[in-house]
Amino acid sequence: MANNVLTHNLSEPLRSTTAAKINIDNGDGNMILDGLTSGEPVLASGTLEYLEKLGLPSSTLDLDGSNGQATLTLKASRGRQTWFRFPWQACNGATTWQIHLNPGVQADINAHSDGGNVKIDLAGMNVARLAADTGGGNMDVVLPEEISNLSVTAKSGAGNVTVRIPGGIAARIQATTGMGKVVLDGRFSKVGDKTYQSPDYETAAKKAELTLSSGAGNVSVTTK
Image (cartoon, rainbow, N blue to C red; front, side, top):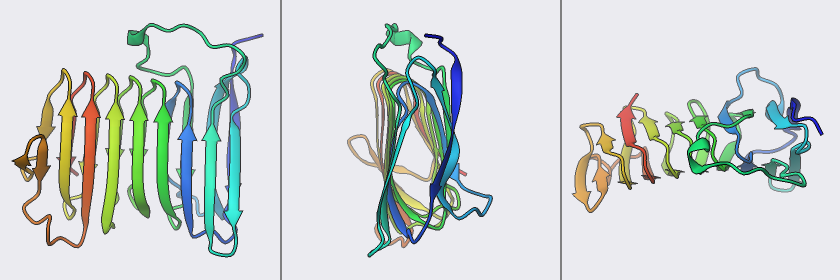
């Protein structure tokens, strides 16, 4: 079977959804996740690339109309056969998923790539929790401006992990790396073993708790 790259157009209805759990597993591809800007009445839209020989990605939407809750699961097909890749090759995917989420829906996001680069821009979005990991690619996360108690976990097996925090957000950060460096904005002070915190964290109305790690790359936190 041919190894052509094909594209699946994603469009999931919004209906009465006010909060959603988003589960994304795009195999070993790259991922770009951000907020929908077109104003369409959809929960999620975008484009999902896939290799023809592995088959179409699956998209499952479970709705509970009684309370406005939804669960959206996007998963790459592994097909009947996988191929061998050396560890140092798992740093950029052959395919890319671009996913836009409705910013008016409170999102609980789980995002996984086996080895691609992951870019997540949460600016302008309503996010309760983010857990994102990649086996070998770089991880780049931008936090939203309006939060209360946001929990963020971002991990890479070998790539760099970079998180950008709006200036008005306080944060407590646990940052670890096996072979790289931990580079944090000067407003975060070390308060424990591998733990850093902004001085107003305990009293801040807008704050985030970050758990960041890389096996071989740098871990960086900057103020945007």
